[in-house]
Length: 236
Ligand code: 6PG
Image 1 (tube, helix red, strand yellow):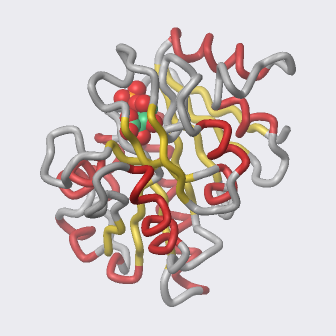
Image 2 (cartoon, rainbow, N blue to C red):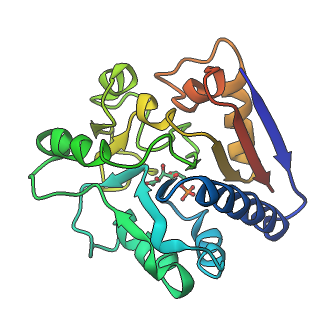
């Protein structure tokens, strides 16, 4: 378990520090590779970060931005993570970045997983950076506790896996999801976990305990792995 904790007094300071971290990484990677991959999560927390990243003077046309997970809805849907990234990140300077989505024409993520993994297999790897979020139920990406497909996703050696989550306040109506697998995510050079608030901090601490069950707190899988150091960014 290799975890670095970065705690901040407020979200603005945290996001500015995280912005500097990410841009520094991307600049370093672009100096060494012609094309790089940035893996980003959806949800509400990272929106302001994405808007800040979009202002960066970076060679964005050489950056592949790929989703860590997706609700199985059309890209125009209000719940789409692809739409979130198009609206918050692929504007301004970052409009030139190439966005690789997950949603394809298949009816369900279970039908679409093979095609999605084949698409992700073409992304330049190792990935420069992966930004994970965490829900109050201890999920990350779309690895939801007790979900159909969770066990298979955790054991998979494919980039993406289908999930049918148990409906909850966290999932809302969007229980059919595609997620990157731990195997895929751990092909990242840097792994960052971004979350805020006291409630999520308590969930994070529970996941840190050696007794934590990956099925009940999937984020614990990434806390207890020792392949890629995990950097936590947290503010109240
Ligand atoms: C999603 C996200 C998800 C997110 C967490 C945290 O599709 O919902 O990818 O995994 O990272 O749910 O979301 P919040 O930042 O909204 O709490």
